[in-house]
Length: 109
Image (cartoon, rainbow, N blue to C red; front, side, top):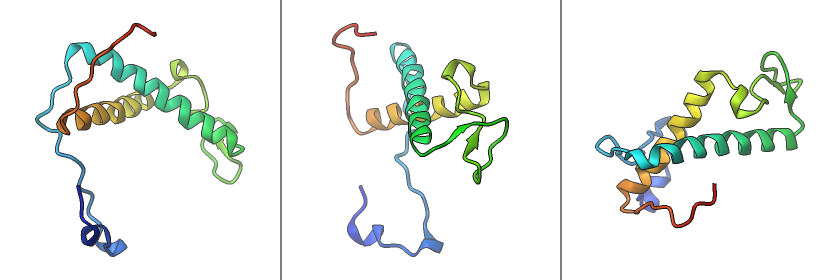
């Protein structure tokens, strides 16, 4: 974790320091969780955008609040899905690096 002094940085000298997850491997039983988290990440992003007045558009236009990714997860281009997967994978790896144990208690999905 970062101490208070480290958090008070000048904007121009900010250097990201995420958890080092380079040595953390995601087990086979967490791969499906990665996809579930990726789908949910997209759904939350889309819900927030729509609540802000955004709608689907052929290309992104901030002034019109249009975005081509305001579609279901299944209809996203593969590169957009991969972005959400990478985010989800890093969340899981960070939790594992921090010492958390992830296991499924009940089959809800």
